[in-house]
Image (cartoon, rainbow, N blue to C red; front, side):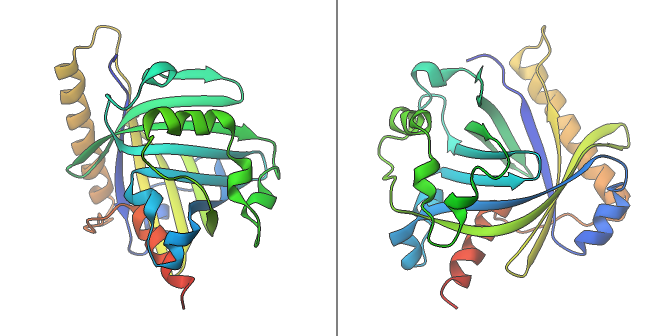
Length: 250
């Protein structure tokens, strides 16, 4: 497998509005979307997240400009990614990405297949009583069958919505960062992220060292604006899904 881009993230979970302002959230194009995740209906009834526990994420994003449906494997291994899914590709309206996902000392491989839709196309799938599985494309099923064949996939229920506000390409101490705030079920998060792309003459060790340096720069830049980094051991997707499943039983 060729060298992969590295997405580096830090999370903030205290006074998100103030953090967004301190990090320059007013400088950039802001978009607002609503996000749902799909999980196994039977598992949710038992207060479980079976897809997430198996490393499968099914995410619906709805916005004024476009909708999209993503099926992601995270964490995964390069051995899982077989056939056409062993390398990234673009096949409109699909985009398939493989990248490293770094957060604090957690470094995992992630593979995601995104299907772009016109705005409003996915509304019915996530509406009360809707069937999220009806919008999952045959190519998504092919991806899961090839790369995660042991994961049961069916009988889905949509969990959400999460209100997401994103500001892209914000200058921060020499970095270009993306800021994305999530709000749902009494939880508020801010994710600050950058992407480190391989250069033509990179060796694996050189890319890893550059990514490690950029990770330190990102953490220092956020702290340097007086913003405290989250010390919660779980990533925001798991925290949000756990909260949404819990809220369905309250």
